[in-house]
Amino acid sequence: MTTPARSRSTRPLRPKGQGQWALGHLEPLNPNERMKKDQDGLAVRDRILNHYPYTGFAGIDPQDLRGRFRWWGLYTQRKEGIDGGKTAILEPEELDAPFFMQRIRLDGGQLTSDQLRVIAGISTRFGRDVADVTDRQNIQLHWIRIEDVPAIWAALEGAGMTTAEACGDTPRVILGCPLAGVDGDEIIDATPAIEETVQRYVGDTSLSNLPRKFKSAISGCADQCTLHEINDIAFVGAVHPEFGAGYDLWVGGGLSTNPKLGVRLGTFVAADRVAEVWYAVASLFRDYGYRRMRTRARLKFLVADMGPEWVRTTLEKEYLTAPLPDGPPPPPPRNEGRDHIGIHQQSDGRLAVGFAPRAGRLSGTTLTAVADLADRFAAGRIRATTTQKLVILDVDPAGADQLTAELAALDLVVRPSVFRRGTMACTGIEFCKLAIVETKAKAGALIDELERRLPDFDEPIGIHVNGCPNACARFQVADIGLKGSLVPDESGEMVEGFQLHLGGHLGVRSRLGRKSRGLKVTSAGVADYVDGLLRAYSDGRDEGESFADWVERADESVLAAPADRAGAVAPAEPEPEPASGASGAV
Image 1 (cartoon, rainbow, N blue to C red):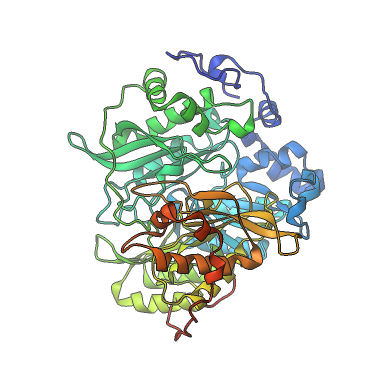
Image 2: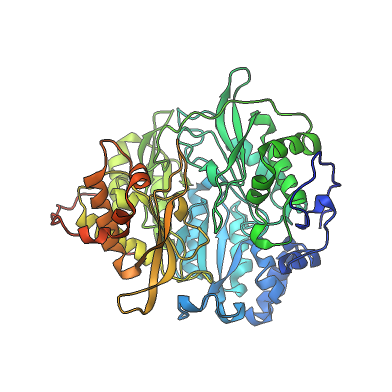
């Protein structure tokens, strides 16, 4: 464990007694802190490689299994057949299946075709041909056995990839724009800043014991696609009138059960200082972050309590080599969609082709086919997005139509419906021990049903399906956020369902979704509810009014019972179009 810095703050923290190292509160105050004090999470690597493959799952120490394994991207998988009503009742060992989810960190979402083939091969050989692209640009595999982890890591590391600090109380993957370096409208190419930060600090034991996870984004994207508003730290492309292109610094964003939007520090960060400033903020979080109660251990709580002025002052006085100049805010996003789906011209005249799986669910077999297409039609560069999508860079314009058709044959849609484009889903009860409801199949079925019922609906709409309150699918900032819970059906029996969060939005006017404690829907009734809600919006909106703006002013009664409108207009039977996204399995 790194020796904490002495307190040199110019202002006493409040509230006190929160386990902050910088104030001398060194005694671990919860089980996770005791586990980390016993041994650093990164130190479990040797046991994973050289001990546990021989003992098998039953021989894994519980502190390693449900603690330190996360420092290397391994989470225990949910045992099959356990319903959501038992999620919060059973002990962890009762929920564990003898398999793991393996998260592969892809900083900036960057992949080569050869790397994607390696991931695909691991999925087909060791993971029952399942792979998920996440909304943090990672790829996750499932059904992984401890006996196979050494071979998996050898394959990944041999291809230049890692699972280090993909989970745990560490600096997680750094988000970056998938079009970095090729988008002619970008403010600055953040690739060098991401690479320097990763090279210097991922795996650094000075940051491997943070109070909680630390989520980062570094991007000069004109669309602001890395969602700086909900990261612990974000560098957002901005142009200083004196110093030119660089970054505006944001801190303290995060969702989960107590969502908060990030705040600007009002500083300008030059490109050559990004890694230094990133490390300074992470170190401040390490030293001053709350460690007594795990539910308040994220940076967002410290920022909310102390304010951005204290954060900036403390950074400059205690952690940085020189103060940061004041800086302008970033310009508004070019595109509120922020997803890079479709065909976009690169600055060199080639094309970036972004396409949508179904709520991030893929297979190793499909990923192999994508890698082959990236070699046939482009230069073998592939990027993951923050909306569970993929992009192939450097496509020859002459081959774009053929590539689009071949992707469509894989149920990967370049010109998706608004429903395919805007729907995301977390892992859900299929694999996650925290989940209450199923998500991936529900999201896929919802896409199909909405495309059938509302074929002419073309307004951008985000529908995020989350299996529990922890917001892995960002339900609080979606137009329609579905938070998994148990709800009563018509007979009063508790069944799978969702609490509704409506009108969330990130962009020019960011805000969290509107919620009402009683606004819930059964899983079986989701399609009717969303259908009716979108019809109510279409009928009641002002010209040019977005869904989020309409929800903000809509009467509660309209939001509470829109299912009455479902099917009010008989849906036409549209002719299937190429790349419509209306077919295929989850």
